[in-house]
Image (cartoon, rainbow, N blue to C red):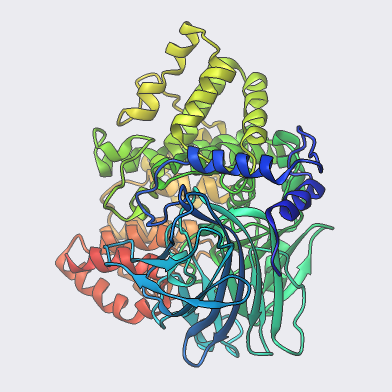
Length: 633
């Protein structure tokens, strides 16, 4: 279905995504076009995209594709409603390893010429399609390759049910171009519809309005009527069922996983209520989760209306659900207001970490949120040590030109970004800061922005010429300088003080089995494990393991932290559990430090290579691209 810009505007008005500004149905096409042109003109240049949106830009996508599991190929057509702002004779899309078969213009599907430009590392190739000044639509007929980086094709044995194959996408940061020819920049937002054909035994889901059960034809129709950036294009196909949580929330998972997932995420509605009480109405209609097979490379991916999550957070005690609060928070910071380029990634993640912890504080109290803050600070200190405190990559605003934007996916964006916002909150007070953030989300709703525009908004709406406050906030020290300013917040946790007392007792000779660890959450256990000394004797490792069953823990965070000690202390009792973990879990957060620890010794590297040879087929390209480099050194 093709939608005109005016139709979409009226549709957005009905959705009320601008609650503080009334939608005027009489607004002319000319006025809207002027607004859209202004937004494009203000968009920062994206060094990770070939597209030239100031010349010709896509506004809406109609996708019609077939998913072929036998050939591991997606094929079909992508039809774009475009705006030729410069009246140019071509429009440029991003592609990487796609087979482009034909291109057409206008609704009559008049065949046109196209050119595929020179390949550039990380970026792929530009697809240059010939158009006319009056062209309103472009259709590209294409197919993917079996090794498309965004796509992970799983055989039945790699799924929970072991009966059917599975497919999922991971488009962030610039992998959407490996499964759709698209203007693959976070500064360009589009609406979309899709028709997806899959085997009848499977259910297809997207980052859009979704079905809640299979049909007999295997053909599904999707609509996303709010404009999203390309990295939020998402598709999953598998043997999936749905379990509702509330009227606008629910869980998708394989039948073998659905009960555990529904139990783990039973408080999803409460999280949504808490989030709305902080920063305004949720604007994406539904908030559902999809629990993916364990090869998923991230903890979660905030695809609108359908967050993808790893099964590694199914800890049976709801102790790892802060990750869900994080992905939910992205519905405001990231999905609603988006970093315009990957150099501004902290605008997505720093805001989201701050918001996540506010949600957790609202639900479980300040002492609980303080634990998350301390663990985050520990992660940040580790990253600063690893990168070097004077590294340019420890600035909030990055320079990733010529590099894979995945190199910016570090705790600098997440945790330094969060602590900058905490610093501002301390400087002006929480009430005033919340008013500022609400205005920020409403002002830039459904738009992409960048660091400079945020800082201009900060100066105009919060600092307001107060030079003393400006010095206190210290934009230069936080945003444009490496490391952390000297006056940064150092978080503390009362609950962790009790953990530290228990650790000191053990260190001073109290048997591990006699320590008071009753009612510890996974966060307390993680803090305890992180405090353990290097090195430890086999006897010490065995004592801790016997008392607390770390090697057989069902909690992935605890397991991953324990394995680092097991590797460094050659605790061979954990070898089989370690291999099982690495063979079945594809989450990059766990894989990279574990493989890095293994490669620290010749014997460990030999073990790592042997495990990796077996495990690599289970990993997504997001993980293998990092691990291939690590293990070849």
